[in-house]
Image 1 (cartoon, rainbow, N blue to C red):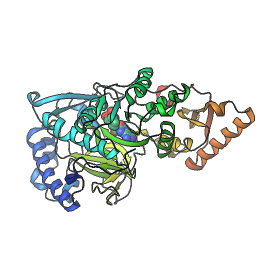
Image 2: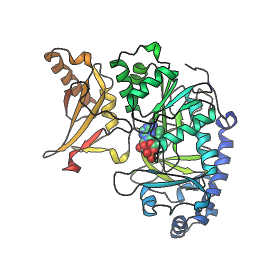
Image 3: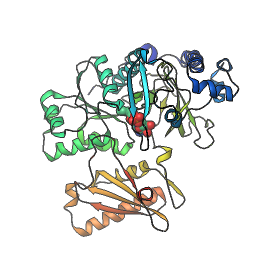
Image 4: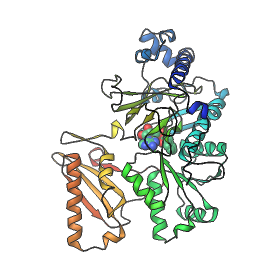
Length: 438
Ligand code: DLL
């Protein structure tokens, strides 16, 4: 495992915060101008708010500028927020929303080469990948940004990329062994599934050369990280991103895993209070917001991601000066209000994954009786499943107690046999909300 700290772009990744701030100010001015002159939506917004790009002088002025939300992309479907004519767009991606039309994003050659691929290269090197690595890319290729985003970054650093895409588990396992893959990129839930299959098929650890996993596209907790590191004998790195801003590579862990470095010369981060939309105090948690400082195809000002996190501006042990955000705790729109208490699915995962005997596969069912209530169906490991009934009853009680201690609400736990919960090949669906479906 590469324990050595390496950089892809040392000058930028370690530049002083003062210089970085100057660069951000210059770039935000250009962004505001670009949006105002090239995108009707922003021209209207600026006019309504009685501001012009010249009102931006320092980063403190940022709060006077409009936020952008997902509905702005939907309302301008498909290409209304593009700042460049299609002549200059060389790639289109879209993220499938749960409702209605997807949100569509377009990239110019500069966006692909100088922004996305550059940020992905930095992310993979920060994760511990390097030339000579065999990178098995099991993120889906297609309109989803995961596959191609990782692919281009991996090629840029000189890794040998296997464009596997998701699914096809038998072949994934075969290639691990035959091609000697050293880096696995996929969702954490798919990694858990592959790890389970390796164990089930009794593939000897020496046949698998993986040293690093670069996992993202869905929330996963520190306790899930520990499980995956043990299961796959790897260092599990968190990578974050979203199509509206880029795709994968907006931020990722370095090998110290103490927060995800945001590539701040390209994305200016803020944390705002979800309700008031006002910036929170430094270090507090709230919704992550990004301004795309350098993108041409679809430049966005203060895009509110709804992802909950906080920012840490301390210089990292790895020497990078770019701010780190905490592991995403969930999305504000995934928060469940149960008997007046706010519950995030990640809190449930955090509790489950620290209990020995509980496997990586679970689902959360929210039902409405008279009041809303939560049931968690969680799989047992094969070894625990063979235990006596009385022991399983004790385990159920202790999971319920741990959940109560963390959430302060009663959760009904159902322990289910190995293999019961549907496995995920991409983003896992952890919550089944029968209140919405019923
Ligand atoms: O999921 C981009 C991506 C691909 C990121 C591969 C990392 C790896 P979307 O499909 O647009 O893009 O979904 C974006 O997924 O707003 C978060 O809610 C969630 N998400 C992405 N990465 C993480 C992560 C891709 N590391 C949405 N932790 C985001 C928690 C994540 N949530």
